[in-house]
Image 1 (cartoon, one colour):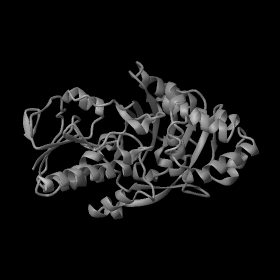
Image 2: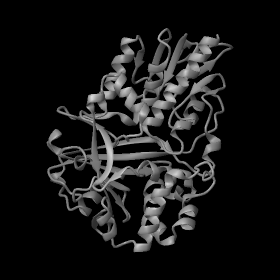
Image 3: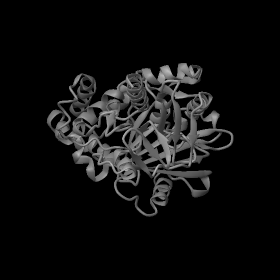
Image 4: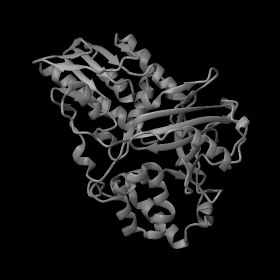
Length: 410
């Protein structure tokens, strides 16, 4: 069977790798490099992800994939600290003492927040799909916790859509981030960055005969009775990992659109550390970014020779003009960094960085097989109600299984 995979992100690569070995596979990626949101910046002596990444101990499929590719020795478990930036000051919130000392929540608020964190993994997320995160927090832990803690997080993540986001997403987000030690959260990272995973996937696929076409966007797809024509090439089946609305534009098939938002992430390098040793610093103050992610407060500075920081922002519709300059200027002023202290900076923009898990999202999730083709990605069931590398790998493996069953049946 001749198969076309559209999209060279983690789902597309996992799907291509999981297809039966007797399939002839072509993979199309619109960008010059593979990896999608997991792609990296090459700085010569090291690579660094364009968007911050780490993994979790429960990511069984990711860990199995690393073992299959001979990369288990690359994986290390590190501690990621968290904090909040309020009124120009950074507050660490990793240890019990730090949380108790945080002045912007009362003791009762902190007790309610701890109760929610312990309970999150046991809640039925299906029942929360039609409840907004705002309603849920107000009902369960009160207005003070919502206003002081959750509302700034929702605002920075979803902007004007924050009041539409479901409680299912919020509870999942809390549950996945609850593996904490007294010093912070236990997170996984690859010693030489996640680019080694993308490189090994590419090597493995090419060794199996998969033809990888980068800088080749798919803009034309037509179906006859039994086959598909993709960019003028004939295929027995197609696996698409691009957003359904983008696929609809290319194929003419009326797929139901999935609500997405874009991400603009700036990576910059400095001589010194500026977040008081905190890895993940959420911004409670209004800023053109929602979090400052100090990579070298998580991964040792010595691997890079410079301090690496991400400024994370999300947007809907069009990215505001000069947004990157606003991010950089605000960061330099807010954290007292002179422009000549910034060695380099890079802005990565993805208009389809992830779904917005609005209320009722479950009803929009498409089946793997639709209208005679296969589709999987961040919009699939394994990535509900929160996207992850783990979910993307599972989606790729599952859609490949569906294709294999069809081939066996045929």
